[in-house]
Length: 346
Image (cartoon, rainbow, N blue to C red; front, side, top):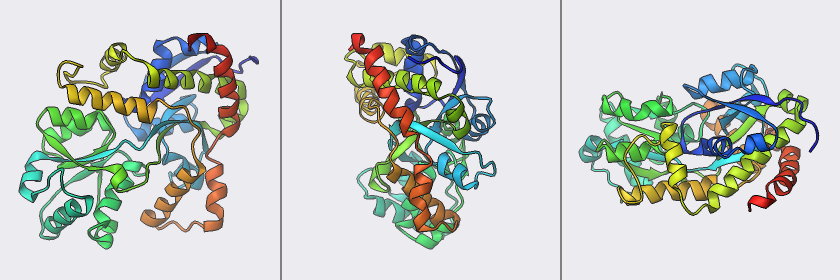
């Protein structure tokens, strides 16, 4: 392995299931095995994480994929380019609505997205105040809510204002009556469901494509200055992902998620069994597979920016701009390093 340009790193994350590759790589000593001394930093919000990553306080981060196209165009008001060598999760978002609102609007889990959108928009047009929250403007969750509402009325969806809340605040905001529903990744839907607060009414993949949701990201400048370090980082995360996909006994993983306050409710293979295996399945399928971000995924994000923020993006430029978000050299080199360093563990 070539010498590392930097070994002491700070990596940011938001407490969601899909930060698990960072947590597991640290827990299992994979960062140390590639020569890195990593400190994991829990961030309060996506805005905080983005800013601290862009300005170099963080070396890398668990990051919303939609942040990268916004940074490329400078519509994030920072304009510091970011690049991603690795997908941390595919689209695992849901839309949940408070049980009270589900009853009042006659919305159930058996409704199609079209039916639930029609019911909710109908009541909104009658003057009812229904507050929906996403996690960040440039996120799969924001675009999921917008596209869902647009099934009922595109013009209404264009002007409807969504609240923005950090993921860990969603359940408490619902409990306190500050919002009526939200779109976020797990495990917040399960926590709200088990608390009797809400029901999942829409699966994101029934409204928008199954594209990358979170990626591991660094600034383009950091990637250029620390190529060997980025390769080592990516290799450690890949090893964590591959192990999470294949591991048989999830008890150690579960305890780690509880320690990091990502699972904040009682749930195990013997209590709330269906929810336990639901979360385990999400980790295995959406987060336990090392893959490079797809250029086509980023093209979709650029299309959403154009649609919902009325940004004029030339179709001929979208492919080039999307390619600039992907750090393919690091992924390919990291795969080789992973195979060489971790072969004995497999």
